[in-house]
Length: 517
Image 1 (spheres, rainbow, N blue to C red):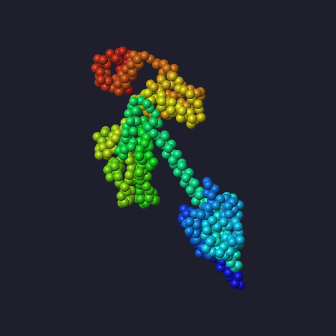
Image 2: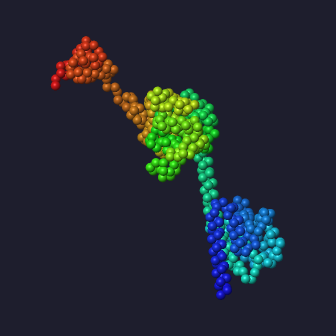
Image 3: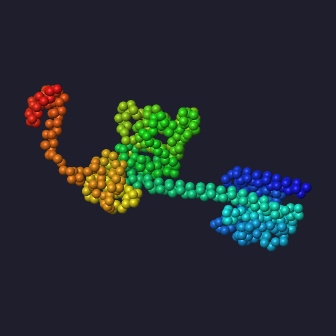
């Protein structure tokens, strides 16, 4: 009866210990923070004299004591083993537990730490189990305890094996978290390098004098904290310039946040820029950071700044002046360290004259203006850009385009490119898709670029014939509007009645015909 009672007490104590160790292992991701508390709990519940957890260094092949109970720092530092050396080394090598009832009688026990000199070795039992992840032994868990006849070392071994398994799972989880963190850091570094390579000024295609001036301005302003206003027609590459400024600045490793002011409705743009508190409006189910908070320490790119509403302009002006704002529905003032780069294709001076754009905001934004020239003013860059886009879309569509025909080049050079670089890119992408050989011909380009020669469509009339035709159409329209009244038709066309009569006679038009009905 006493044996049964003692057995149940042991089982309850074991369950309490396992629960306590489980709680400790869940307490932190840092393995070093949890190993010592685990050993301390084992000492309190198992009556062990000493305990150690060793881990195998996969790079050096050395087994060292990671944490201990009952050892001094110097003793712990002495506890280093090679695989196969001593009892610890053999357990790591074979992956099997060992029990040494009396360490005094076992020549394999090396006592490298020197911790057992103070006691008679014949009084100490040593139990060691492997810590394994799958079939891989990553370390050991061992305990010293005073030898006694009434203590079952096999029961201790079973309990230690369970604890070792729990530690192994914790090590596995933390190792996977550490490896994932290292992978993400490496990926982040790779992406940063890729972005720097992709968006540095040298990668903005162009060697024209106009673009060289833009590159010089980017180089001058990048390292500063000045607010930049990028101006130019749609499709000229204002966003590329903003990227180049950021990734060549001192903020290059911080966020680069883009906001298209024209794409966001007036009802949400304030929330997008400055964030909102939970319950600030219908649908605000949780607090949300705005773009300025997301860009803290980095750069925010405000594209199409000329489309901001007057209300938002006022709040943006405060951010530019004070570097602070409040979230929608909030009272707390939020300070931000953000560099602002803005862009627009609109005439801000005209908008100021109409009262649509604030003058004070304009002067706050226009600290360092950069004007991107339209493609028609940088003709020497057209062939460079075309070559770049041909290579890009050839790779993307698994084609091998070797050259552009002379006729196609002439069409590209003679076109006025109202859509700028973006239109050129679209034209080249279309041409690459249509090309059936390794050459882009003129007929692969869109109809808007074609000429009479490239399409074999000769002019249907001479200039005098076309002008006579137009004159006749204008006379007919004027007479129709005036119901055949020659004087009224002449006034409408801005000519005298005499000239009107001569032109009607020349074209053999019967004005009486328009008085009917």
